[in-house]
Image 1 (cartoon, one colour):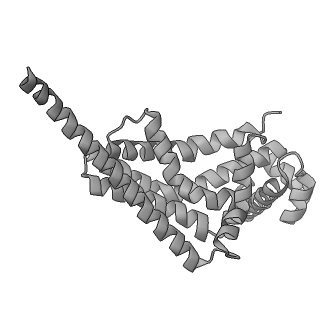
Image 2 (tube, rainbow, N blue to C red; image 1 turned 180 degrees about the horizontal axis):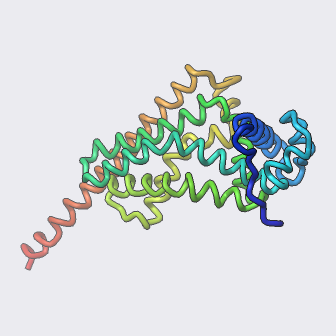
Image 3 (tube, rainbow, N blue to C red; image 1 turned 90 degrees about the vertical axis):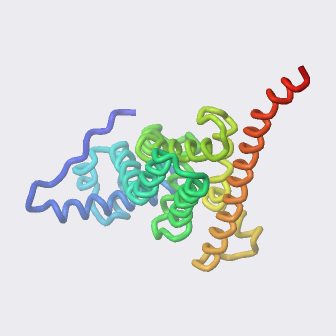
Length: 251
């Protein structure tokens, strides 16, 4: 794959209209890459769906690889704008050595944003397919690299630290990371297997009321698990303190 050239921007006077055209192309490309995959989505079809001619697409992005990179950057930037405040708040909570209830609330706040992105965002439908294809590993690696660096890594980093602190495990312990995956996995099934979820629930769609029910149920389960892991931590701490004393008594 050839390295994508940087996208071009119109000079000063035409910037606003040029940026609108650029975003329209990106929106159309996200839809087509999601529907057909990178190989099957042609620049001609992307341009047609965006309502521009092929030379216009080449002007802004040079080639299809450039369009694909721009799609990943657009998604990463847009998603991170929503997550950044809760991630920053969670980071400050950790730095302040807050108590367990505050740590749990910080984790729940992140999950609420995940739920909002998944169920209420109007762009989720087209982006979902883009994400699913990217996750299969069959698409160009550049999207995974961008999404990992700009969005997933900072989100996972704070999530791992919260789960580790609450449960008394190490951040690098596989148990900590499995726990984080299972907590977020409660929602991911609605993203990666929406049809199966709807069939099981006997729903035709997830409207705002149903989304609220899913979110409330997941939040209740998440609180229960985090509190359970914290209780196990406290039991380990107590056992660790009493074991040497019991040994001295026997001696």
